[in-house]
Length: 278
Image (cartoon, rainbow, N blue to C red; front, side, top):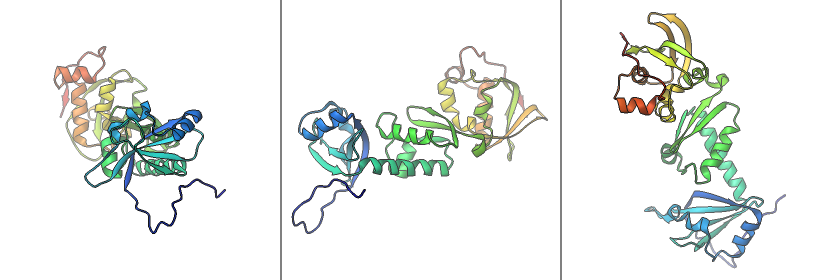
């Protein structure tokens, strides 16, 4: 139970530790990991493919690659310094448990802060963790978030995750309404007044993938009330900037450039006439 691995040095007075940050994780099958650990001065494609993730920054922090095995608890930290082999290495015992605990902490922070748009640049700036869809860390975070019962859906983008929370945690969202066909609706902020435009049609086919990403903050807004109001069918929402609600409605009403409209709205949806409600 209390067994692990270690590298022991004889009569060391103190450890000369270097600050490092794991910027990429590669997990190898059992046999490949054993082969790597027994031949670390050999060139490997996964090291050559990760050269840009290994460097020393201005603060002398070593940005490194962590190599783990699918069936091994340990790992090896690598700074190849531009080479295709493990030029500088550090053994990391219990690497798998370390990564799992750190990813779980990051996931808990995201959920605690109720982050609907998990912007990768923002995550790096705030938590000092590099996340991309292809650096191993991104997939570990995605898997951990998908395990949470407060999250119903995650849309993976190149630079972010768009998260939809369950109704129990976040209430009904505008994104949830995309699952049904709505006509002639009006999105209104629950607490602040703003310009309102008629949305002629809102369904799962209304927006392109770009449109869903571009307007993720509006789609993730919480719906407080659906009722027949001054403008007609109204949805009072919260958790989003009121101006973004107005801009979203105006965009769907065709009150934007043709190029932007075509990028956001599916081709089969024809641009409606502007119908501003003041």
